[in-house]
Amino acid sequence: MSAERFADQVALVTGGSRGIGRAAAALFAVAGVKVAISYRSRKAEADRFVEEVSHGGGQAMALQADFADSSAPAMAVEAVVKEFGRLDILVNNAGLTRDTLVMRMSESDWDVVLQTNLKAAFLASKAALRPMLRQRYGRIVNVSSLAGVVGNAGQANYSASKAGLIGLTKALAKEVGSRNITVNAVAPGFIETELTSGLPAELLERARQAAAIPRIGTPADVAPAIVFLASPEASYITGQVLGIDGGLPI
Image (cartoon, rainbow, N blue to C red; front, side, top):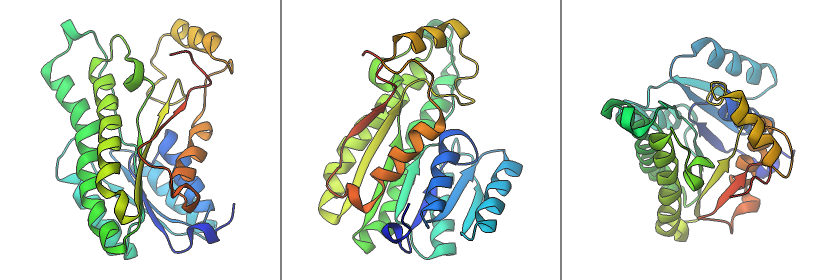
């Protein structure tokens, strides 16, 4: 992958210490991007990522940020700009689940999922737009989910947050497109991450059998799409949602 296409660019990947976020951050680093990742509690894994990038000749930083706190997204963006002088790419990937049926779901379980998965993406995007508008260049990629397109029983809060990300993507793309800033989303299906590890085995097997590509995806299946949407080659793509689900019927 050519480093010239991302010359001197800086990316922030939220929730980048594991799963899809880490895979995307690693691919950005290979492409020559200076990468910042945020993490909530996995300091050792985040530090290991920075060390690996440094050993490979790249530049990276890790930021502790709990996006359930409304002040965290803007603070993370400010720290990246302070360290690297600019911000070109924002990947809103941080997320969590609190799964249960609506009749059993507490208001706090609803609130923390919507705060972390949706409101934090809004706040991070708002903060990132300041340097992007000054530069007249930027790429925002939101990590939504198939659950935000079709809904999942037992995941009303998660599905609502990921559907909200799709709405945010489409609206924000129309607001900032004239400033050479694109906003897109990916909607992964069933991917082998910590968020899906607790799902019933029979559900994953049904998903595998239903997909046109009969397997469960991996973070490595999603990361290249994120990097592409953040690249100069995707300059005329905005407001789009790319499904990465192995061809699951919707």
